[in-house]
Image (cartoon, rainbow, N blue to C red):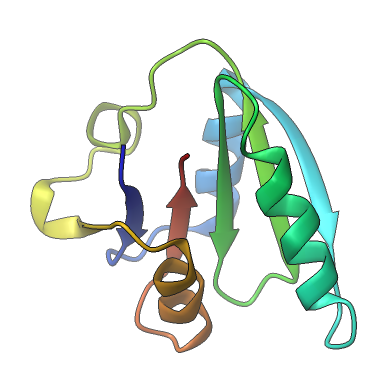
Length: 109
């Protein structure tokens, strides 16, 4: 499944709390010095079954969610296909969020 770049603005609290109510969450906090090593640790966690990652604009955290429910962002958040795009490259997802071209990114391996 490809990664998801969320273009539509959504309140970060709503995004996070909605996911937390459906999945088990683990967070990885980073700063400017630790971002690369924390990102590598975060990405390694996503190889586990039934997991996906979340990275949001203006939040110095990566989130890992685990659960057996299928992630359906259209039903979960009321998004339409115009609100997001897919990418095969997880680095593009992170870049788009960091560059302000996306509100958040969901990384799925």
